[in-house]
Amino acid sequence: MSLSLVSSARLLFLALSLALTSNMLAEEPSNKICPIMTEDDADVEAKVSYQGKDIYFCCSPCVKQFKTDPDYYVKLFQTMKSVPAVQDVKVAGDVKLLEQRFCPFSTKRLVGPSSPSVEYKGVKIYLSKPGHVKTWQADPDLYAKKGVEAGLLPQLKGKI
Image (spheres, one colour):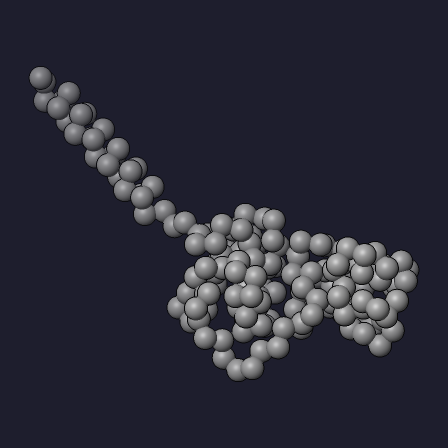
């Protein structure tokens, strides 16, 4: 074998080894699905650590939502068993979960105590984004009825 052929073979072997190693070291989310947008894939770029445990989201708006009430969301993720990494973590303080879990407009998106909200017949309704407030206000009776029928607004059951 000529020297250049041996050198080329070594370079090829080195390149393949590096490619394999980098693939093996590529980060894999411990939760495959975003725990906020419950049908979207989690992304390793949208990661937050909570008490040393990594939680993966689909996008920066979900990270931002989590950061508004991290203890609340971890408690909710534990209840829903959606993030195995935090299942056994002790949540600080006495966190009380809302009866409502999902937005009546974005039915696979979780809401929390800092989510935009409206009052309806003396009951607080949580929405996933500020634009939904205007939508709700356009026909609150219709959206309340639909939300209750879909099981998304348990706090209104028996009130409408």
